[in-house]
Amino acid sequence: MRLKSFSAKSMKEVMAEVREAMGPDAIIISVEQSSTGGGVRVTAAVDGDQSPPREVTTPQTRPAPATEDKQRGPSFITPEFDIADLKAIIGHHGLPYDLAERVMDAAKSFEAASLADALAHAFDSLIGFSPLGLSLPRPIMLVGPPGAGKTVSAAKLAAEARVNGHSVKLITTDMVKSGGVHQLDHYAKLMDLDIGTAQTAEDLATAIERDRPAELTLIDSCGVNPYSMDELERLVRLLKAADAEPVLVLPAGLDPAESADIGEIFAQMGARRFIATRLDGARRYASLLTIARGGRLALAGLSRSPFVAEPLETPVPLMLARLFATLPTALSRKRAKERMS
Image (tube, rainbow, N blue to C red; front, side, top):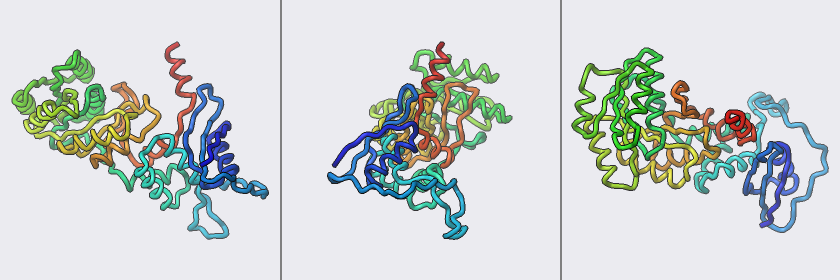
């Protein structure tokens, strides 16, 4: 296998160099974005010792996306991407081999006009999407490891429900984390809400029954170590007492294999949906797919901001595809420096 690195101002230009020098069978090993905005560096590999012969034909201008091919008829759409671009995206996000193959096969099976369209088709066939409503018959308990973003997610959901005229009941069982109750209480006061507290399963059942039923009951649970049986058993007792639907909350950017394990553990506790948080603080999103695949969980919401005023985004395949298809640039670092200055 022969390795070679290529650099150019844009991903499209560098992928053209890779294809010209190493052919369509080149494997993308890594993709690096310059920290100064100076371009993209790609390392590729190809089997064998010889480069494919270069074609000496005049370069052709790539057709516009989703345009009709006049020779092949109105039903044929000329793709705006090639397999090398798809490989680069998959390599950047670090998808496990078997999942990468599934995404690749699903994307290639769809006659898409763009890379985002092809990825959207792949994601739609591989994982589920099930957004949370603002009026639900059962309480929702946000569960997950410590620091995953459960409290902020609860506040975002409550704020959106209030804005849309729904009654909300907020309860926290997070009596362990320092300032956990105060954080949720602060958010609740901004929405003119009171919060209930519950340390035991009996307390939680009483808090839910207290006052009249709300259209949306949200329970912010204490962070749980997914590998501690004692903590998981306590969480199960709370779920049974509340007759609540557990919704897993995990931040983006976690190790894909670890995320799959965590998703499977919480699925065994009854979770069927998950919320992905801190998308603004990550640049590799393979874990979003492995969580869904590992626990067969449907994606219920996306959070790109720690601010309660910015609600959870309703996930759809094309939105997730665009998230994957957009490689990081120096712009995010520049804006971060501007905010700090």
